[in-house]
Image 1 (cartoon, rainbow, N blue to C red):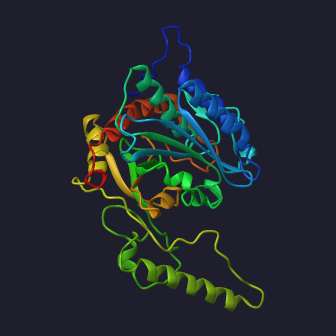
Image 2: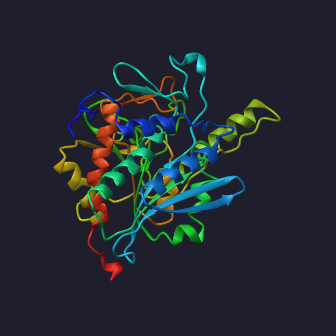
Image 3: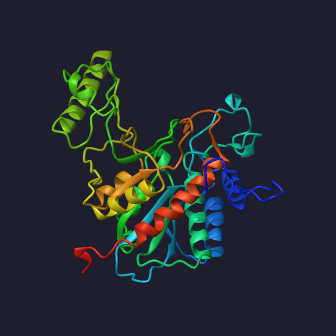
Length: 357
């Protein structure tokens, strides 16, 4: 499907995939009281309609991970994991042109809603890509699992962080995972194999040359560099010094603290990357390899020993996650389904690896 061709019917009616996307956006999963039950019920109904097996795992009270599964022809092989989170960040409605949970579509096809980019679009794109592949009668050697997790926007501590420690996660036998990335305002597609630390420019760590690495990654320090841990320790020491200088009763605490980072291979010799990048070349998608400037649930997947790529197929789109008037154009959304419909067969058809016998 070419960009700008949304695949509407001759009468100009809305594509059913777009309709499903807008329905999901209208489910209010905003913090501090996300309606997780409604989201899980909605996604489970879609999974049932697609003939996917369903499992719900309560990782702690009130926090459920939904797993939908498309069984492969050789379930002994390691699986493909498609992850997305169901929660969204708060809104300030006075700054929105349209109500943030009505999924209004304007005359240009821009769909305005909290979660349009981060990341309800990807949940539906996964599902609709599978719908297309199943309708075409396709099947693949590797099993494909979809996980829909809570609480990513508040650190994932009662979501993916707990889920990866569960026997239900280990039973998924994950080989490779996809998770969220960032929109890109240019023609390129952003792709992240890890995330970096961002040091405020006011912090004097005497390593200015390291704070602007080559390759256009911007202000930050890539993980696994020799200075990574010492920079974090130095930053914490400086914050402690500020608190001490401010006087009695001034303290700090960490909302998130991640010292152990993992990077997913993007070497052409890596079979997962070879499959992913090969599809992008075939589809003439220009990838911009980045170190993600924030933390997503994929860090827990990588820490559990599984390669994971952060990828949101949204180019020619301003980066509006967590911002006012978050939107995604329906053409970009539908193009994303097409991209996943090519990526999934390639990943799920990676030949058996040496460790798999």
